[in-house]
Image (cartoon, rainbow, N blue to C red; front, top):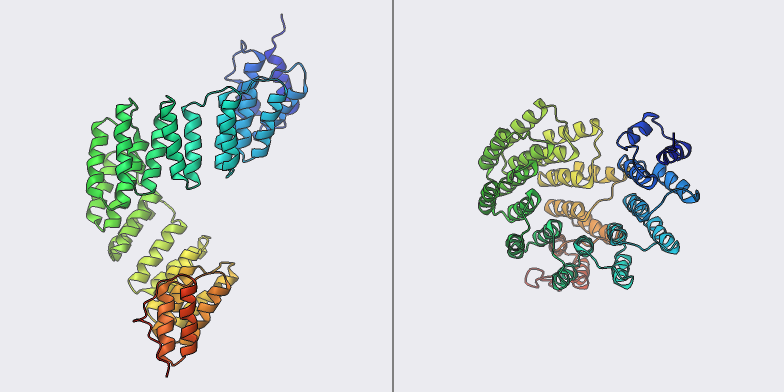
Length: 468
């Protein structure tokens, strides 16, 4: 029987890999027909290993094939491993692999460069991404629509919107047609920057260019409209989506529910929830968090409790976000006992109490004038290795000013500065006013000068310092 070169790859795999699950090798080999050439078999195995999250094993197999002079390797083998390095965050290894491939005389392809550009952008090295993009033309290759799109995304990721749209215009000028991924990225950036007019122009341009919308396109625009509290327009877009034959998904319904919640229209939010269930989608923890938050913001503690009960009946465990929303709901309802009951339940559940949760509790305590417990909670943050944020300091300053304690308020202002934070205008204004009231004019004037130094707005009529 003639030797089948495919089995040399199998032997190499078994020889070089140490897998915790012995059956994994069989699972990897099952989809490979015996007619595969050695290089095709090797590349398929490398892909399978990377899909299984076995980058070290894929690298071991690739390295062994690299060392064995008779083992097959081609440009696709290198492209697969470059993707593996980028996906695992090892950008230097991916760049070294490209250099190695070129040193072996192999002509690089657009896929390699596109993968590397994407990896550089996602790992924060925009300068290297730009260098690679420029090099594509230098080696005689032409960027395709995916290459342009990952570079445009890189600019957006780094807050360089103008650069991204300039590159998009260059792309169109060179006759490279944008695809669905390109348009979705551009629309998402417009929505992020609240430029919905431009987003809808791109949406219309898609149809003119023969590019079909998908559920991601619609969800991105729905999210943009809901963030602007334009739920009427969002509902019209939802109707257009269904007429176009695009089936909404769980994210679609969650966006609408959140939009109605932010508008305080909880009856619409609940009817959307019902429609969601009828459409075959079960609400997830994100859905319930949005509903709990909506009822909380509307001051409807009964509605909040009912949704929380339904969530528990469905055996969904509260997340850190759920607990914090509930704490906020009770704090806003001036029920700090129940707020702390939820806080203790959160700790018992092993959920990390973050700065935002502390801020919600302190705001509630300061609002009811319980500065003693607010201060205890503030000091306990250091024990939990949590650093107070600007919001927490400003909340505590507000509480002490409300109580009339200029000493504590001034101490917190100074502590903020020492920690590299800048109090907001309200904190400065309230503290200055209280210092003036207590006759501490020098301290008040010093804070006023600080405001000017930090470029904060101030109003002389509000802060008259009468020096007698």
